[in-house]
Amino acid sequence: MPKVRIKLNSTDIEMINNICESIKDIAKKSGIVISGPVPLPTKRLKVTTRKAPCGDGAATFDNFEMRIHKRLIDLPANEKVLHHIMRMQIPKNVNIKIEMKD
Image (tube, helix red, strand yellow):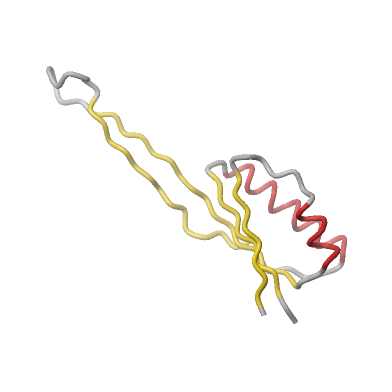
């Protein structure tokens, strides 16, 4: 039976968890069993910059960090469930990728 793999990633962990809960609710109402959401490793992007724009003065630095959170959900291919998932309102800062697997 073919399976659907849904990959989610976002910088906002609350939004990605809300989307995962919505997908779980849709699957539960339809009576299908899903595996996930599986939390994948969080990617941490770090940038260190110097505070002084001209280079004079004490060497002080600013550290900035952005975290990219990822989730993975597998579920059986069901046309009704996929239709509901594709009709969901997804925020702009949440990326979603849906793949069909055999």
